[in-house]
Amino acid sequence: MRLAWNMAAAMANSTVVVLVSLIALPFYVRFLGMEAYGLIGFYATLQTVLLALDLGLAPTVSREIAHGAETGQQRRSASLLRTLGVVYVSVAVVIVALIALIAPWIGADWLHAKTLSESTVTQAVTLMGVNLACRWPISLYQGALIGAHRLAHSAATSMATNICAAITTIAVLAWGARSIQAFFVVQAAFGLLQVLVLRGLAWRAVGEFGAPYDFGDLRRVWHFSAWMGGVVIAGLLVSQFDKVVLSRVVTLESFAHYMLAALLVSGLQVLTTPAFNTLFPKFSALIAKGDRSSLEYLYITASRLFSTSLFALAFAVVFQTEPMVTIWLGDAKVAADVAPLAAWLAVGSALNGIMVFPYCLQLAAGKPKLAFLIAAGLLVITVPMVIALAIKYGAIGGAVSWAILNALYLFIGTWLTGREVMGFAGWLWLKRSVSIPLIATFAPALLGAWVCRTLAVAPWMSLGCGVIAASTGIVLGFAGSFSSGELRRVVDMAIGRRTPVGR
Image 1: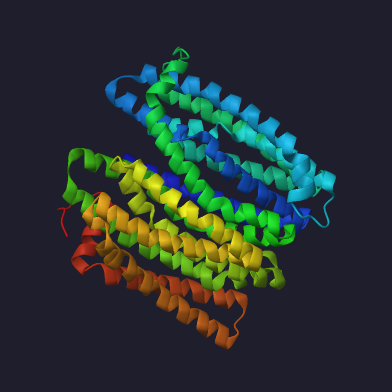
Image 2 (image 1 turned 120 degrees about the vertical axis):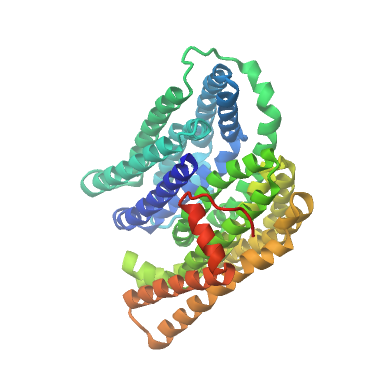
């Protein structure tokens, strides 16, 4: 029940965060302009890249708190949490100072603004640093709540803060100071509020309020944290390098279009992030018990369900972005510019999302080194490919490079996971659990797009056709992946009934 509740909470949080961003964006563009939204996109990229400074400490504290609850060592876990709180505050101060130092250079030489003045861009970048510092400890206290099995508390706080921040920001821009500086000030205030609420919830969940500081205890968790930090850093560089390069080589308006496309594609995280948060601990438990048959059954069954849903959603983005953006922003020209970018980014993100299963299995099996080596290898490919394609083709080059990179990740990662971790996670998994849902969801999505294009239907009609095509793809994917008996067993498992494990 707790596993199902945590999964539901994680999905609700992901859904609300994405919806809030999508709903608020037209207001931000209207009040601030497309170039200012490009600055918001640059901030999002900067925020993600700086997560490398976390060095894997957030998942480490999550693991330690969960372990401490099982072994009766809550005081040691509480001591670690208190110590890491000091570390995070120190890093936040460094972030403010570093970004304030380089802000003039970014405003003058890195970002290419046409309508915004250099001083405005510099001030905005400086406020980005303040915003990042205010939000920096969020991951620490979220990790603590996850480790204490209080994911619902973390999700509720995130949803409430994001909704209130968006409403307040829109109100300030509409009736107050209509500037990008005001945007970042309001966001920083709500980021700090979220930290304070999460800190209180984390300490209440962990207990042991009198636990001492112990910086020597950091040595105990350093090995696990170092490997996880390597995985996180390499993964972040792979996923964000296209945005870093494009922010330098294209105009701020073109970069804004790219980030708008990325925001649309981020809707796929409604499935991928909750899947990781739910599957990783479950895989770990089954491996610890030595229950390989249940692990294999869960891996294959869940990946078929997940692949079908993910591909159906991804192909809806691929083929329906233009009418979606036309309705959303009311600007057909922007929609035409964003559509091809979103299509390539959606393909790459869907392939990346499928790899959540091999990635979870690698970590659950105690092989973070394999995950690091794969990420490092992809980074070696990413750097020259993104630079070459972005310089030659601009924003579309960055989007295409993301799709190519994740196609390589799919094949290389699957092969290595099957060879080094579990045989059932190799080529046979790719053939049976991924390719069938891919074909089943692609065919109706392509047909629906062709019909809409041929008949030149209105945007709303096109979106309706896309929904029908996606629903048809899901039905075909489930029918092609499961027999009637298997599907009934999956439904029973999903609603909590006991079922015999087998294939």
